Length: 143
Image (cartoon, rainbow, N blue to C red; front, side, top):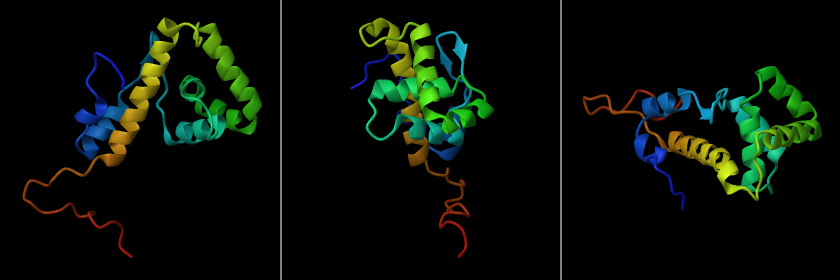
C-alpha cells in the first residue's frame, strides 16, 4: 500500500480524454523536468530493466530514460550495459541509495505515479456521447 498526500491517479482517470491529459502533463523529479514517458521510453525501459528487476532498478532505468533525448534513448537500446551503468551513475549523482529512504522516495513515488497512470489509461473507456449511443469505434476497427 502506498501512503501519499496525493489522490490515487486511478481514481481521477475515468475516460480516455482524462487519460490523455494526465499522460500529457509534464512530470518532475524534484526540480528536474522530465521528457514524457512515451511508448518508446516505456519499451526501451522494459528491455533495459528486464523481467526480473527490482522496483528500484526498474525505477532508476525508466526515470533516467525520461531525462534523455529520444536519440539517446535509442542509443541506450543499442548498448544496454552502457545504458544501465549510465542510469545508475545518474541516480548516484542525485544521491539515490537504497540505504537512504528519504532520498530514494521521490524517485519511487514518481515511478509509482507513472505506473498507476499507465494502468489507469489502459482501463479508461471512451466517454459517452451524451445521447446514449455507443462511440462509433466501440467494436474496434472494421474487419
